Image (cartoon, rainbow, N blue to C red; front, top):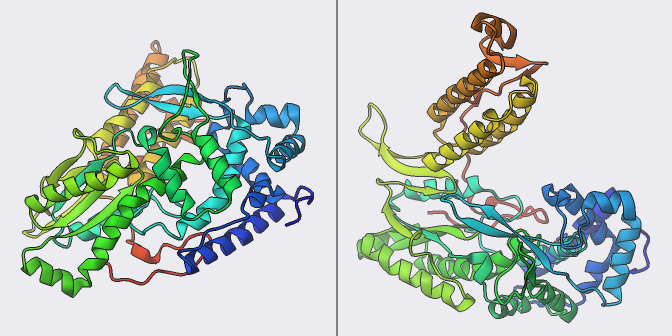
Length: 479
């Protein structure tokens, strides 16, 4: 490796990183027992650091500062990108780099609770991003198809599509699991043990361990050691949590393989045995059971036993068992089987959950309840991304009626806002000035119309989801 290479252009850096990642992924896939050495030079490589910096700078959190008070903009405007990266690379090569404390902030959660969010320094974020560029292709070769959260080219809609697929094929009992305090309670020794199975470079291993043990600076200024968990919000944390939780994937994937093909699984059902399938998205998961409630109860206990060695436990309150006819919520969707209007046959439907609808309504209320001194166009520019993002997420479900309701709700909120802004003007004048075809418009900015979003069924991709480093598909029968 040419460690004295100059800083590459963005396109050259991206091409070099992709080429090396492809090799790492291929080697890991072809040899499941291989342990990788000499990866530290890749973390220090100018191309990897350059790509890592560009991703940190382009992230939404680039405006947030760590304990040193520096943001990505500060690095660009004051320190200079190349000087910053050169200094960071020199520290890594000299083995003098040490992660600093993570600044902790508390953000609200539904139900009035709050969760911790860790904000690392920009310097640490770049090294974490470089580490992720090196480690992710290796561990992706081991991750199972049933996991969808925080993985390249996989999304929540894939998880929902798989649930729809199996629930439409007699998998009627559902364990809706939630890992309690996942990011806070993961055992460092268990996690590092799983990392060590693939990573033989002690320098990389020590760097991962240093980030886990970096410590936290709380909002009240108290320094706290991190004995367990990974800081939620860190660039490397989702990958590390997937490495830890893959123990659950591997357990259920092995059980699924042992059940055999579709014919063998049918024979199991005739003997009174259950078939079951895991679908996981980060620390949220469901176990789909073709059996009865007793089978589901035993699998819940089995799941808890699998998680225990890595220091995790199921949330007693959030881990529930439901029948598909009752329905359950997962990743913002309500999934339930019921009869189609005018027909006797029952179908499985996915549509926005009540909690998801209440959440977007709350955002709309917050935006339209503010000051009326701003122009209508400014309000619309703030509302439209919220509506567009929400409807794009749910447009693959049976969401047309919900979208129509949301459109009517937003229209009323904007109309009331206009009436509050112009209290002395006649309503007829407001209609003439601001409503074109009854849509609020100003300065060529029109209120986004959720009711016009086309509903498209998401295609279930099963094991045909290729990684960024391979176009090969994994063979296998889904059911």
